[in-house]
Image (cartoon, rainbow, N blue to C red):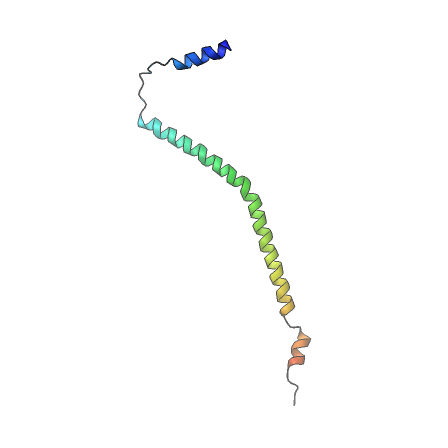
Length: 89
C-alpha cells in the first residue's frame, strides 16, 4: 500500500521539461495513432469478411442452382416440340 501511495505522490510532482516539441513530432504522433486505429479496424473487418463472403457465395450458388433447375424444367423436350407442330398434308 505504501508503494502505491509513494508512486501516486511521485506522479503528482511535475517539473518542466524545457524541451521543444516541433510540428514534425506532432504529425508523426497523429500518423501513428491513425495507423493503429486503421489496423484495428482492418483486423476487425478481416475477421468478419470471411464468413460474410462465404454466405454470399452460398446465396449465389443457391440462386444459380434454382435458375438452372427452373430453366431445365421449362425447356420443351424434342418429343414435345414435334407433337405440337402441324401434321404434314
